[in-house]
Image (cartoon, rainbow, N blue to C red; front, side, top):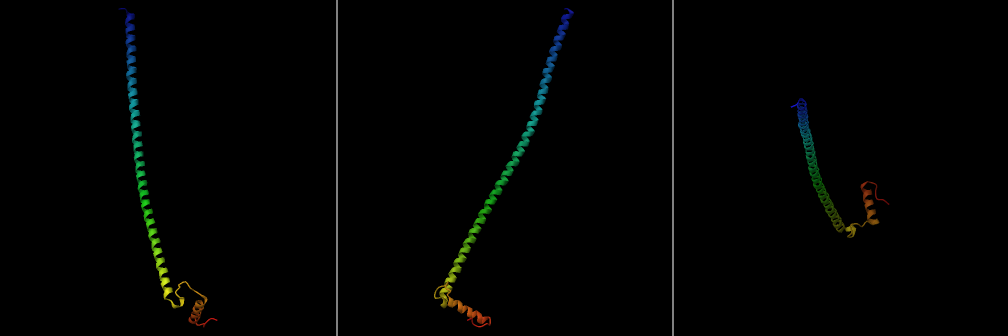
Length: 137
């Protein structure tokens, strides 16, 4: 074997070794970069999951607040209805008492809402006596 042939064999082996080294180191670098990127994606996914969990909790709180508000609105509506009914009953009782008072009063002639001039004058005369001024003329 000739010396020049040995040189070409050594050069070919060195080139093949360099190619193998570049491929091996390239794969390692790509694997390391992929691991780093995967770790970043996992971290972002955790942050997104945490954010989603927080938004879900906020939505649950808002739903609970809305349910409390609806319950309070229903309670207030019922309270208002009850008060309105009580006011109507009180008004009916008042009107009934006025009607009965009018029926019982002999000067009213059976009508509770009657207030003619003569009755007014009698009232004014009575007030004049009470105040010590005497009857009005």
